[in-house]
Length: 232
Length: 84
Image (cartoon, rainbow over all chains, first blue to last red; front, side, top):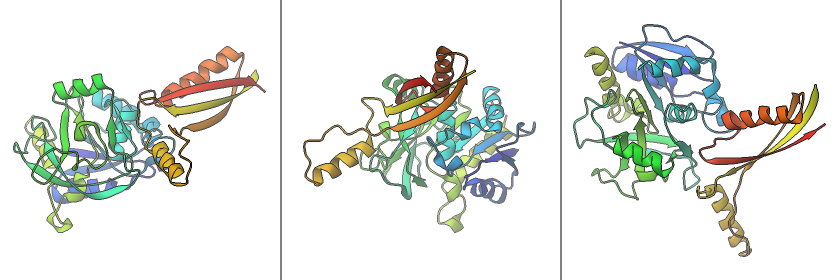
């Protein structure tokens, strides 16, 4: 299968995403530039990487959303193509309205860079199909605006439809207030769209994609994508 | 074609926790000014707009606010417009 990793001005996790998919999994990867207007036909999954696109000017992800390539990303997603947005990529997906809600400033006002533990709430998605139920993943976060917010109706819809994919938890997998690093409603760390082909998550699975990096808990997400595409 | 100047005030909607405002409020209280409460912090944007009429200028800037300058999920915006 083939991944497409988009680089915006200010992206800084694009090479980590390429490393995770190309070096760790041996899959084909194309690096796409924000000024490209077309997504090549043979791409199976688009990765919107982390970073500070356009210096986080105005609001995180607000300017990137109007990058020339984003029109193609929206079309690609609407046709059912897989899109994963990590950290700033998640923020871009909400600004582009491919995912509901918004990422607000962390409640403690600080940029938080540390490992967190995630429960996997839905293992029946293209991004989590190889994860066993009740697995707790250890994945790092690095963000100042990761406090997921949406109005009460939207949250109810997300919960009812099983669209919350990851929640912040303690290492035992208990979803507690203490384990919530940034104030996100219901400890939400990652959500999927209604159709199930667009995932946004604040934690960085690509940073924990090889044991040499200290942990490879994140790799299973990319492996799940490959598994989903190859078994289609 | 006329020219207009817009002044846009963007604030977080009521009910959405403004952590920046809260932090400033706490600092004000530490400074010894407990009288100040409910601090909210927003953004202020000015633009110039070329349009035939004030109504047209308003339409242009209102669309810009809805789509980019503000995020209506969490923010309110107020536009003031005058001809220059």
